[in-house]
Length: 201
Image (cartoon, rainbow, N blue to C red; front, side, top):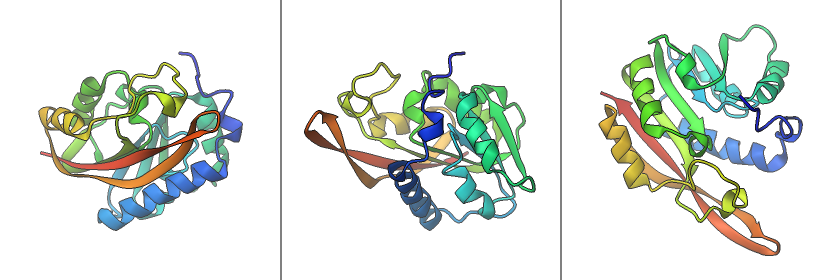
């Protein structure tokens, strides 16, 4: 598998990324009563900007990402006493049914098959597990400068329907942040970030 983030990993933890993920974590912690006996799974963990902030609230975290380079940066941050598991590859490679909490920040739009992914999440989560996804609402492709990626954001009603069909109850979808980015030279656009919260039936 080609590591599409290999050339970006070393510079990933820039101020804008740190700020974006900190806002996500802050909103998540305010919204979800995290439990110390939960096993978490982060989809698209990258360098751990989200998961390492949430780890103190949980028993353990599985960090999943397809980029070896990004996970390499994450491994450098670990002190050695954390209860973590690292999965390099697609989330389908994680097969144990022991997850209480799934979270993902700005990674779902990189997942080609959302339906298949949600079906797998149903298989590896415990009954009543909490799912939190942060991503961008539907846009014209300019967010990634018109690079070919699987999804140009999401219509939250359509995404919610996919969660429901996979066996999850969607509890809420709301805008939690707005990113102002340069879509073309000198032209800036606002991109709304949403947070979807669901529960495994």
